Length: 242
Ligand SMILES: [Zn+2]
Image (cartoon, rainbow, N blue to C red; front, top):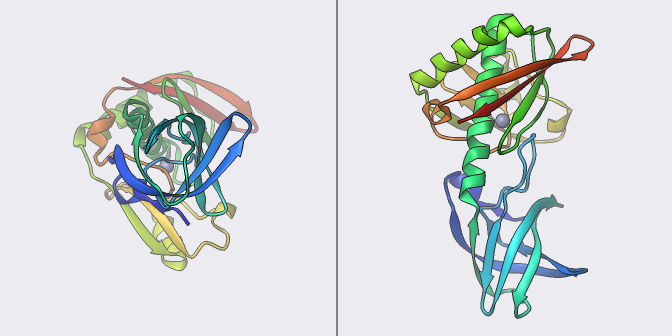
């Protein structure tokens, strides 16, 4: 199991760790470390990129992904061959990650706004985050005329600069807790004992494994770009952050 430093501090940009496994896959290397700040992707949030440095080599991390409880760092190595148990330093591409954290927290604020305007029973049914533009799908009809109303709610939450809290809960406790926000565990949580809940303090909580900013004020400048009907009462909302 890789220790997830991004869960201990989502603002960690650089870290030290030890190499656990080295695999060569064509021109690239796959490295597993005992700890990492690289987010391996998940919940609609893309993986981090960045750099790993060992003694005599540098690896540009193009992709990080999850495999059997471990985070694998994939990239091209320049210099010597990495070896197991050596010490490395890692640095994630902070510009990319910070934008993704803001995009991700904006998705939660948007989710709250949609529930506030269209009802607690409306839920997320997919999201795809990226650096420039992201989108979320909701199980309700949203028209173009609704977008300014949604924006107003979002701006209000941003202005209040509310704390974004991470709470780990037992399964049963999470099920109960999420109900008051109109949320529930999904099939993704089957067999999981401890659930990570992300809460915009007092307003809205969802089970989520992504990285987030600490306060809603950091998500300043959310722009709802457009809405698209995806059929069967589902609407996609596209947005960006400044
Ligand atoms: Zn999330």
